[in-house]
Image (cartoon, rainbow, N blue to C red; front, side):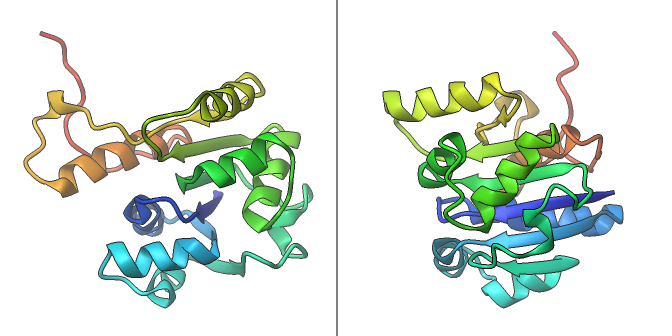
Length: 185
């Protein structure tokens, strides 16, 4: 199994980092792209450096490298996760504007009918944001804001992150050791 993972500049870089860690544990081949502002967010919000995050991936591509393997439909993979997904990246994907490798790889996922999961991060949402999400949802993208589930009774921020990452990876059939599932009342 191969997955493309992208980290954009929105707050929440830890989601992408945790996804990479879980993919490594699961033996899934990961192909990583980090935007310029994603690198800034990693340094600002986490204890990681962009280089440490790159080392978590099986393969790393510069965001400006539109000639990378993942920019072609002939690159076989199960799909792509953008975590976090900024509104700038969302708009580029929705408009088919391959401004960088993240948008191009997402465009490839859509055109090849592969799963594309977008962990969008913004609040409040403007009508433009909502229209872009609806447009992408209608053509097959999974819009998955990392909204906490409090029925799991999270005891830490780590629990909240694990629950969101677990739900995102389930989209690809990957199970992780995440907080309990809803069992009903």
